Length: 141
Image (tube, rainbow, N blue to C red; front, side):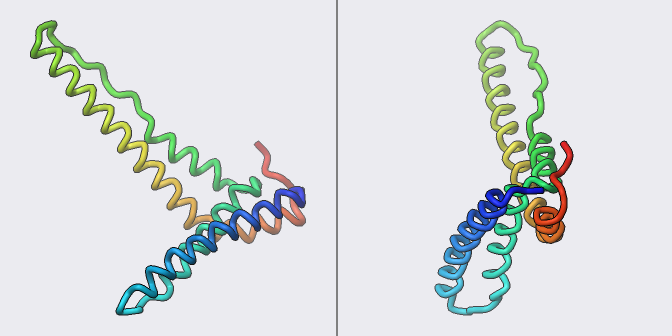
């Protein structure tokens, strides 16, 4: 059974994140002249609350899924064959720099995909995680 302390942390930190996002999106909504789409103000705080709560409760698969998707972005780039003259060394440095930038972009995109997918799925997983927190058991590792 998930400890009471962990449940309290899930409520508090999820609530803080939801409140901050609600204020941020509400300021943007009130600054907009059209004032359409109040759902866009409500949805991100709810997603943030359920996502952070699922991560803190640790009795579901959301955290493992996000880490697994994030790990897709860390790939080993191929080795570069070059000639040992000035043009070859310059080519080697530029290609290695390009691979480094591509690696960082790939890691950031996979991290963003993992967090977005985790947020969307956490809305459906959160009721079961909450049930497990009060009545069930911790997730087996």
